[in-house]
Amino acid sequence: MKIAIGSLRQPKINAVESAVIRIQQSFQLPETGVEVIPKAVSSGISQMPLSLADLLQGSFNRAQSLIDFFSRGSDKPDFYVGMEGGFFCQADPQTTLVHFLQSWVFVSDGTSGFFGASCAVPVPAKIVAEVVGQGRELGNIIDKYGKGRNIRDKGGAFGVLTNGIVERKEAFVQALINAMTPFFNRTVYMQKCKH
Image (tube, rainbow, N blue to C red; front, side, top):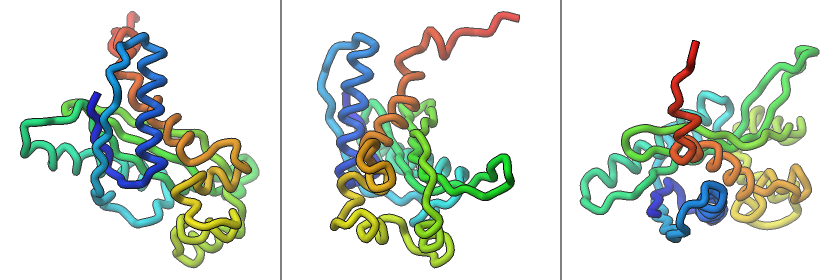
């Protein structure tokens, strides 16, 4: 299976490989191997998404850029994957605004596509103040909270916030599985409703 991904980041590339293996096992598909084709593409949104609309738009734009790029050649991937991670804000039942970190994915076969999301984890107010209040990108500040270097290419902010229970790769694996399963579970997704 050949999959183009709109990123050069290793956790995202590894997530695609892991998600496909899990899908092949779950749906008892032949394990054909996974060829991931990473390509840097623009999300068309801000560097640090701060809303659900941005997360969905960014992942969609990345997949669409890949479709446009590969439309010029004859060797087309089976799937095009756009991935985006960032914040969204929601009022809780007490009307307190809570910021969450979440990963979103859009997967297309070139004709149709589906969105998928990961779990969401609340973000501490001190990090929200730097990202939202000061306009800084999460990837640029998370190292000081994780007491490491280049954390975005390892466990990421998910890993720092959950103390390694859920890392960046696994968050994207969840989102990818959620976005890809409609292609493989057609009996459920394509079944017509009976009234």
